[in-house]
Length: 359
Image (cartoon, rainbow, N blue to C red; front, top):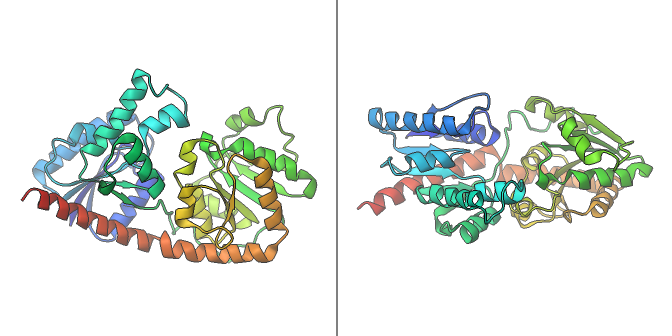
């Protein structure tokens, strides 16, 4: 099947890159857009829309797949393309700008525009992909997107990079967290838990933008047991994951979005068979089971996180079991083989529904 794949963000953005790999397993793919380096999303969306229309005239693909951040492309091209359009909404513009990043009030003109962008872009798609059922419920209840129009595809991870290795031997009492320090990550909770565990000889390694990290830690935490590292290339992360006794998957912040999505790092850590602590929320329960393949911890609670870390480090047999079961869960629910097959099913359903509605 011939599919045109385009995105608002660059192709190397993790969600886009993984979708592209899944598509290549079963289909002929034509990609339109920037492959590397983040550019202006508005300009990129306009250029990619033009590329889509040109391709529609010259090649007439069987399906158009709009990846992240494709909301503006959907607004521009959604009414101009006659063939089925599969849209990976991935996140809500309204939720991100008004609640996750607190840039606008929900009732402000910009907040209302953001909400309209979400609804209108989804309305113009034949079908929509989201990463969890919990996220789909939000899109349905808050943004008015029909639930029966949404399919779920876990984020997953690149198994060429993240997989168990012979060097998967942890250092003693090392806790790993890495991220960009978004609100939903709950970095202050993690730093406070590190402070609480300092007297037990438990060390933390945090890989994050250090300038941003200092805004959270200045005059609040001693960080005597915290090793700080600037962000590293994706290919370097497995080295740090393999050295960790416990990985922090998250999310641990207090934002509502933190309860609706599963962190990319969670998939990366369990794919390497590492014991991982995750936030107690509905999204994580869609993938994992407390005490079997992961350890669930109340969100926004540094004392609970500290207790969870200490308990696991004090019980190496539980750590071993969690790691082994985590890898099996990943293989069964979120491996590239599973997700690429599911995506192929979603594509077939999208095409069948589209042409059935035209008869």
